Length: 110
Image 1 (cartoon, rainbow, N blue to C red):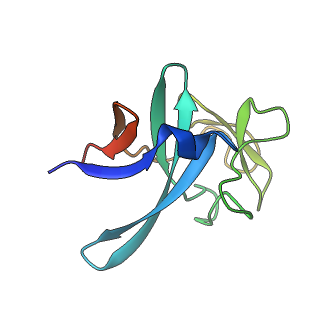
Image 2 (cartoon, rainbow, N blue to C red):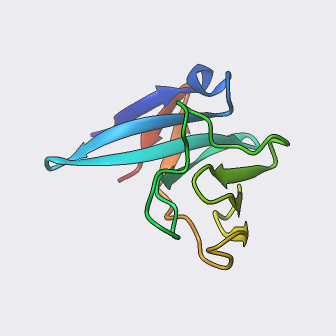
């Protein structure tokens, strides 16, 4: 069964969209970003302290739009790999969440 998470249009305002999933009663926050011609998904949890990256809805990028930013600890993450390139968790990575495009919809692959 294909699980639709959001549409490409949902990413237009900020370049990212947070989606809350129910995994057998457990609440999981993920976020999707547009990357090139596709999309990438990450679990919304900083490897430093396991807090969400965003303080505001769907705000995951730094002011330049080049890096994902943990608003709690100022950790910067490479958008393509999720690896922390600056901050308290340098060298660690965000956990990926498998997503893909199905037309205009972002779908979960797991």
